Length: 106
Image (cartoon, rainbow, N blue to C red; front, top):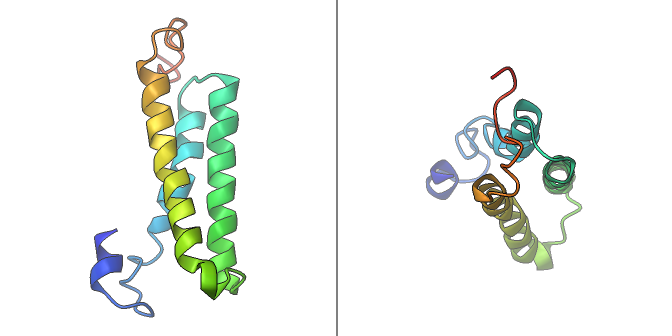
């Protein structure tokens, strides 16, 4: 997020008043909104739960200071890796054979 790079920590503008939680929950929202395969849904839920656990670790101070950069990069790789996984699933003709990515009700 751009605001995290410009505004110092401690300010409510650093995370734009908690807007970052939406990026953690996006995989769950996406898998609930669209008709997706069970494996895609499980991966989406796992990514969101791990993201919430990571944020909880940061909030309560369980993230070790010596490894904070490593854990941030790991979380970023997991979060952005989900977008790659979702795009690959969406563009895969075998996954779309049964219109798995069609919005519900259409």
